[in-house]
Amino acid sequence: MIEPWLLELLVCPQCKGELRYEQSPESLVCERDRLRFAVRDDIPIMLIDEATALDAQPTR
Image 1: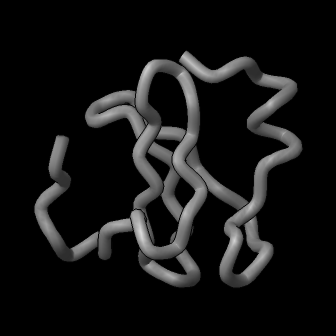
Image 2: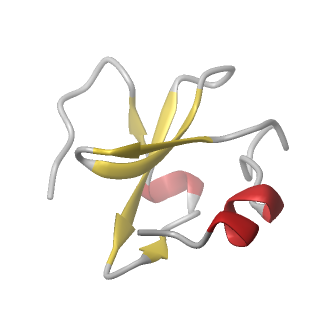
């Protein structure tokens, strides 16, 4: 799980908007851009090229 203080600092790399934390699958979601950023081994993968569309099925 991501530390709460880190969640307060992280923003979407595309629009700089807020991110919502989800536990299953562990990820950060940008509602504005409809993107899901995976969290692997407690490390958020904040690369736009690695993000998945919210409409797509999450991959592991």
